[in-house]
Image (cartoon, rainbow over all chains, first blue to last red):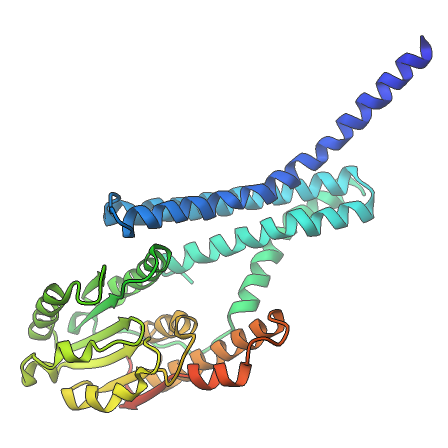
Length: 121
Length: 226
């Protein structure tokens, strides 16, 4: 009985521990979203048929870039924090490079694009 | 790792990412100009029929700069080669009548937009100032544009990566940097990007040829500024 309890706790503990992997994975997967949304905006405004008015296209695009930058950085940073705080250093470094760094760089690209489009950079 | 150290690193990472992107794509430039006389100038830009994404990027990049630094700006996106001709010429006619300085930004692959302009009255065409053309192989149009009245023409000699140049050039030109300097700086940054792209292409990109074909040159008054 005691053995069964121990096993159950250990398994539960491992499952709980692995939750630190969720946010880095989300950070990486999220990068599909801005690409898809911007593709849809571009097609809607400049493709055939053209159903998104040009006056709407710009504010929507800027919002998408802004939110994408913020979400990418948030997920990338929180993911990196959780990996560093809960994981072995080598594994943390590997996962940060694979999942968090691309998200952080993509976030920087979105922010850069936003600032350029606003003539601020 | 301690949670406080992890938190510090997590906060620093986005800053480092932004710094990396800026460092990879820009160079610090102390070359800044002023841009008085906004009320005297107008600009027109025309984008040819490319992919929706390219149209999206061109317009979102170009139009805000033109709106900010020119008193009047018009931007056209074509759906086919002859699309927008009437409207473009009507707006150009209006701009040339109202403003002493009119700049043209032709964001189109190998194009013959110059033939559209020939029909305008000569005294109006004298108000054309800068004509920038992204079109591949369109540098050769320079003498023709100057003969039509433009003060300066900037183009690319071969199969170019002109969008990279244009990304740097428009922002420098609108900042008031002298045309010659804006071209020089933008060419230098474009060379940097091509050099870096070559590293990632594992030697497939013929860097010297690409640079030679892409470097922008200027006909006419290189001392012009916004």
